[in-house]
Length: 536
Image 1 (cartoon, rainbow, N blue to C red):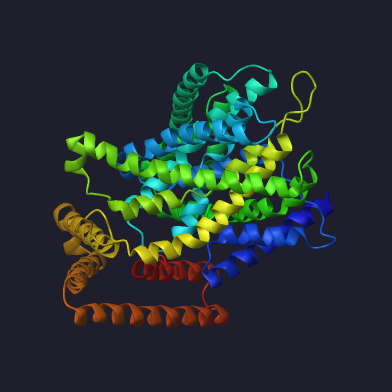
Image 2 (cartoon, rainbow, N blue to C red):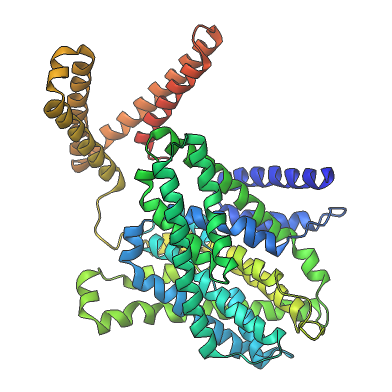
């Protein structure tokens, strides 16, 4: 037990160091972690670390989906529901079908049902990989929203195909499109219902019981597991339950977290948990290769690689073939689409098509394949399916992931939809909040304002804050000289915050003030710096 714990702690430490190295090299960390896992796995004497598929689905998948749902804008998600649906449902079924018929024709021993099994496994792109690759690249907001929305809901459609194909093979039956379609609608809709039901209960607990910041954080940690397990217990989609519940709670977060401490603490907890889970799961994908190769029976390694590379090229081609008709046909057919949506152009569609990297869900589904059929016979082509899945993940994650930033830079793709720059939006929001505070103070608390010098000082601060933000907005809208003034403003403020942190360090050493008071002021400095840096 102690040795196993030590293994995972060392693995986690290595993952953190690799993430830091990936940041230094400016490479998306999922790509770097998978490659590093491969290198570590071939070092002589390294202990074998095996991934339990059930643990990936149960421990890793719910919180990762929940975090992705939490940070997804519901308004943007609903705005682009058509392209998201075409990718998350239409493309998944199209990919599964083409893969099924293709591999059953050129891989010996593969039946149509086995082909659908492989297609269901490798059809969904990975949300984490695409987000990590695009994080530090200037990409139109529409593209990010569509990719994140697709990755949120495509797992439900792909796992439905996977489960029905597996049931057909294990029970030695046939694959029924009609049964699969009916089941897909049922498990998806009921998964959403269960997720929203659990989310409403959690909302009521947060909203009406006297919770603390720590309890709020703890409830958000167990929420995705409650949604996932409740849906899976009734054989509905746990994925859709977590996604729908996470979107609902995120939309109502202003009511759930009534004070700033709960919000800040919860966000910090989730940031830490996210990096731990992502770091572990991607490096473990690379470490799994020796076990996959060892289980490869009936095929030579060269043959397995050939089939894996062919299928990888196939899924990349399928996505690129789908993306342009899926983008432009609705524009040709419906005037409302042409009227309400700016023309996406071929560049944006190409980026969305090239960003179809596979990851955690595909490997977990492949590894969860049973060893035998109901009659006790070995599951046909199990080892080859797992190996092909690994190759598809490796090729799409590394090849597409490494080339995507260069493609985006080469295309010089600009913002598709007219929008106000984020920094300007933040300044305008801050200005409105300050005006609301000043109006409340003058209209509702005039008597206290006349008698309380502290409140009068607050009023003066608010008025100065309004003037400051107006001046900042003017700089954003004006000439290059004013833009440079804005950069100097940020640089000087950062230097001031640095000096303030040094002073807080000296105050801590002086032992005159309590550490708790110093930490609170340190947090205020951090928040002030975050406002001017945009979280970067």
